[in-house]
Length: 280
Ligand SMILES: [Zn+2]
Image 1 (cartoon, rainbow, N blue to C red):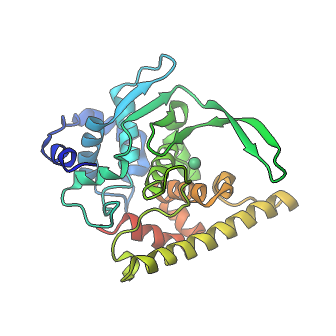
Image 2: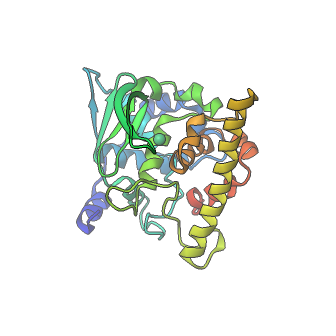
């Protein structure tokens, strides 16, 4: 984000979110106001800026109402209020935190899941084609896609630790600092002084050591359940796909069901608190 853009954001006063709309959207998302969640006033201020900066597009004739846009904004901004900036410094103004999502403007809202054609080349060089049903998709530097059907069930999904909006927006955070054509690796930029580390290299090494161990424990539990029919671990087994998906899926749970998350992933709780709650 250029200095001019940041300056304009600071001086622009986005339209205030009407009280009745704010209350009705929050009533559908009880996890947002659960104990320990970010300060609602800060969240509301960020949402007003978010709505002023982002453009919503309904696909296949879907009309994106104010309530739909605000619901997406609330969930997208939920990780932000107590963070540092992507460069590791504290924000000068709360709205600077939207720098995390500054690489795109468009949010495409589909009525339901989208079938995407995929191709993978296996180790022997054979190309496999398949279709995948997507509830959302985030691309580096590109627009973000969400399925409204999946966004609309966020309130019920919280018990299972599920949230598609948070999933896609933390992918965007993970995409900072990656080179063009590279894939994110479950290793977002960390705040200065992360968990008391004096150097950025030590902080990153700590992050990667803890998340790698948790990822391996999870993937082992998934394959044990598949092979021997045991109890599958809590959370979508899609998290076993890659460290980036593990980070996104576990962040969903961290924000919508902190209590169960802390029981299931005690090693990740201080790690995510160090990233998301440094200014709390
Ligand atoms: Zn994902």
